[in-house]
Length: 179
Ligand code: IMP
Ligand code: MG
Image (cartoon, rainbow, N blue to C red; front, side, top):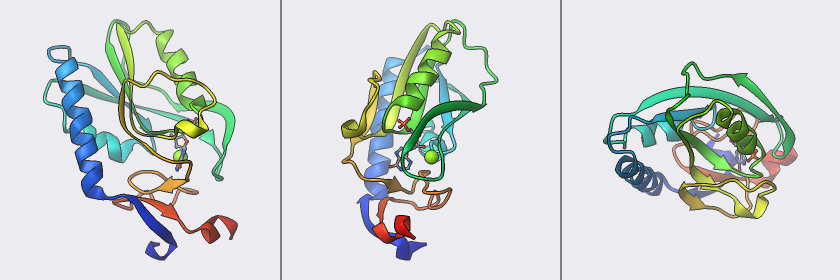
């Protein structure tokens, strides 16, 4: 697995700093509010568990799984809810926690679905954003960092369901895609 990596884009120490900063900002903004943090499976699970533990106020967790990608690196444009929330979000303060926002297609669909359930508030937190690839504008309230237009893996992010267990956010060697 490690032989497939071209370079480390964001090392684990930097990721930890980003998660701490996101948790600090959200803890301040949601003091006394008991927000529901929504983890978008599967990619976000690693970032979610770190960001969630940086929260210093009461907060709850729930999970949702949407699928827009096949096994390649381009969005199919079609979003499907594979697993829905267990929690009733009417009147709740909800924060969607994403690993990465690329075209924005997945998230704009999820925003529409969750808004229709009448939460008190709905905000987006993402560890990574690729602004150069955006097709649909999504209002990001909490952002770790902008990254260039490169396909990244690790720290939850996959290529064909692999590399999620890498501790750093990495760029793959081009020959891995061409194989
Ligand atoms: P979007 O709908 O194009 O914004 O795609 C969002 C989803 O695509 C993310 O939650 C990821 O699962 C996946 N994705 C987008 N870019 C990357 C990447 O560089 N590496 C791995 N997965 C990615
Ligand atoms: Mg994915």
